[in-house]
Structures are given as C-alpha cells and as structure tokens.
Image (cartoon, rainbow, N blue to C red):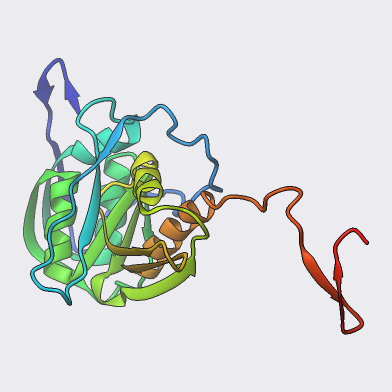
Length: 236
C-alpha cells in the first residue's frame, strides 16, 4: 500500500512446492443483504457501452468512484511483484488475496490450471485482470471478498421486479459498490421483469439487490378470494 506518497512493492518468490506455513480462512458467502450497507459511499455508474447491433446486449459496468473509496476497495491497488516458477492457479489466487488482506472465493475448480514461469507485477486489480485474460476468468469484489468464476459459466436469468424502475435498479447496484462487476442487464418495466446475463454468483447477487427494492403489498387494497367455488370479497 502507498504510505507518505510512495508505493512499496511486495516481493514474493514462489517455489514449485508453494508457500509453506501460509494459512487463511476460507472465503465465506456474502453477508446478508441490508439496506444500510455502503449508505454513505459515493458511487457512480459508468455509462453503458452502446451495443454494436440490435441483437447485442449492452454491458453495464459499475465502478467505485475515485473519491471516498472504502478501505477494502483500496486494497485492490496493492502493488505486488511476484515470480512464479510453477503453481496451481487456485493456490496462486488465494495467495494474492492474502497478500492484499482480502478473501477469495473460487466458484469453479481451478486446481488443474497451472501458472508457470511468470513474473506478475502491478496492482492486485491489474494482476487479476491479466490472469483473467489468460485463463478466461471474470471477477468482482464486494467488501473484503473477491469472487472469481469462469467466463463461460455466464447464463441468462429472468426474475420478477414488480414496479421497480430501470433507474432504481441501476442506482441500487451502483450504491452497493460492486467493483469490476461486468454483466448484461435488460429491464422490461411494462411486464415487471428483468433479465441478467452473468455468472451464477454475480447474477444471484444482483437479484438479491433488486429483490430488496420491490415495494411491499399495499395496505387496505381489496383482495378477491374464492370460498368453496364462490367469489367473495375479503373481510366478509
């Protein structure tokens, strides 16, 4: 991390046997969603890229604002210099997270992927992007957890949004500060549905945010019920 204006790179050498003596807690699931999370964080959605043709889904990417960045997100800029002789990708990713003081969750088995004879230099975010390009991975971060999945696991999921508007959804996702979350989002307000194209874990996280926005059932709204095959008004 930078101190007094200077960045001190972290130098780590890896042998093929790995890093002896290192241990850390396993990555845990996201904490339960609460509406107060990141309530004071200033975030901004990046303007979605325009699709190249009518059949292409727009990719919506939300980044943390340049100012008032939460401490956990600052750890993504940790400078790392690492020489890797031979190491399983899964172990390497977990080590990178520990160096920066973050947790790592791998959604797919990566033990068979091997990183050999590489010099990794840059911020944690830059190194994750590089490994993602090499091994077809996507990642996003929330709080102190980095979530990594294979890019080819992305699917389309459709769910109900009630009367929630497109703007409310995008503002809410930005407010929760998902870093590097790339996904396609299509909102059909007239039919009250939304479609998300993303890996399963990211898709579920977006859905949990949207579900929290749905308005509760209005009080004193007449409800029609059926008793023994005959229609009756509620309250009778």
